[in-house]
Image 1 (spheres, rainbow, N blue to C red):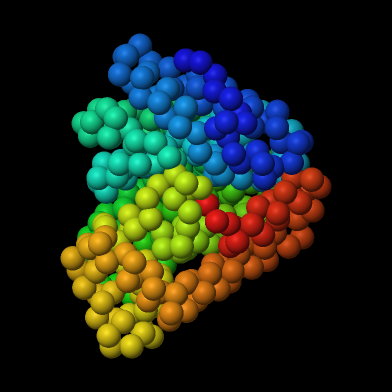
Image 2 (cartoon, rainbow, N blue to C red; image 1 turned 135 degrees about the vertical axis):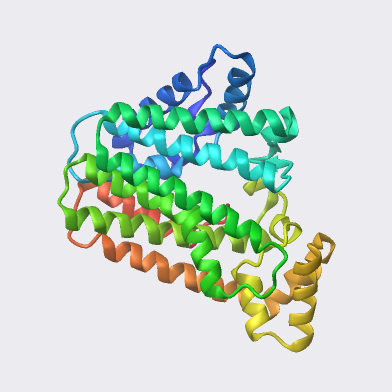
Length: 332
């Protein structure tokens, strides 16, 4: 499998300090090597995924947390690859469930190779992640990642069960994104702390750091579905609406908008009506729902920063704080 260009595909390095570059490049090499298979279709879809790029934010956090905590070994490269594979497998399965056709500016794997092949290769990537994890030989890491994977699956099922349900509350929404997105951020950071031999208090703090960062990240993702740039995001606006997802901007309209505004949004959710997107965009702007969602993301961002109290970490710690600062302000 050819090695893709870092500058073309791994945008995260734009946000990372030069000191982590050797680790990041080692991560990319291991990802490519571990996607190898004697089965041609697995190899083809694996190559397609690698060429698609992505931010690699979750594994980057793992690398940075380990180094910020003074870890001097190399096993964090394997743990970061586990995190990346879990995320990748989840995306493959999500795209099938959501019938998504575009991700990162090009056709999804399911659109290109078909649903059955994509689901099965997602399973292959999940199992490869656990092969790597077992090789680390740490029962606490194994327990953390197993629990995390289970919660992600629960979150995805819960999100699916709430599709087209305008009665979803903000608390229910936060719980869904905690499971389906934030727990993997938490595992990346807490796992790095476990690997680095940090004490229990610091390990828990790093887990909270990742969890709150993940919540902020997902809320902004949901905001961008109504005000983002499709070219920058590499996906179509209104995908959430087409899937009937009651994300925070819509939940806020239903809670605080006028009867007419709430009725329009409720109907769009119930009917999964992407043709209503222009009207919904107008409503979430008029009601301040997007501003409210961004403010909630900033609250979680601040909680993430609080969890780093007492951690210096040199350039690695500084880079973690910079990433957190960007989390609630990004446009893609």
